Every structure is written in structure tokens, then in C-alpha cells.
Amino acid sequence: MLGFVHAGVVDALSAPHPRALTQRAHEWIDPALGPGARALDATAGNGRDTLFLARGVAPGGRVDAFDVQARALQRARRRVVGAGERVRLRWYRSDHARLARHLGDTAIDA
Image (cartoon, rainbow, N blue to C red; front, side, top):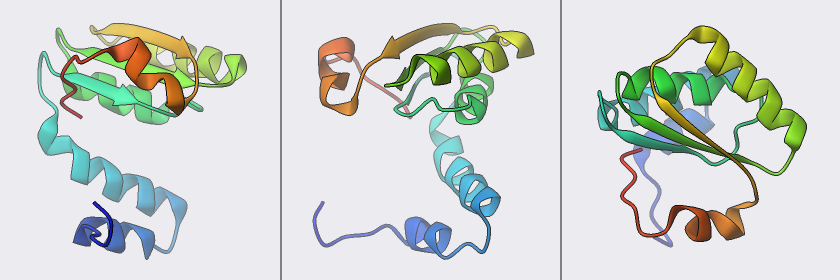
């Protein structure tokens, strides 16, 4: 919504360190996660957020992870699969403009 910024976002953006920003983002998203939930990582990158989401929706949940770089998806896949989380994972080498095409009108919890 244009002109509105959630207070948690403002706090996160004023965080002194990138890890603090990530931690605050995780705290903000965490209440939407739970066993069997479905989560979206729109920039899989190194897989740290993908792993956080996988742990949050386990067991029985699903994470759809996107990145435009094949190498990033490989790193993320290794991190999450290596951690042994029991979730369904979908990996997409795609950009944000194509999210809806891949996901359709399926509900995403986080």
C-alpha cells in the first residue's frame, strides 16, 4: 500500500547490522509459519532464509524458492536439503515478474 510502512519494517531498516535486519524480518514473518504452512522465498540467494522458512513450515509444509541465478538455487538447495528438513521444496529459476505464473492463485502463508 503506497504511503504506509509497517513499524516493524522501519525498525528493521534502522538495524545496525544486516544480521539484525534478517533477524527482525524472521521475527516479523514467524507468526505466519507453522506445520503444514506454505511459504515463499522470492530471492533464495544463499538459502539461509529458505532454511528458516523450511524449519518454520515443517513438518508437512512447502517452500517455493525463486532466484534468477542457477548458482544461488544450487547453494540454497544444498543448505536446506543438507539440514534434513521434512518439507516439500520447489525451486524456480525465475524472476519476480513470473511469480504468479508459477504459483497461480495458490494461497501463501508467508
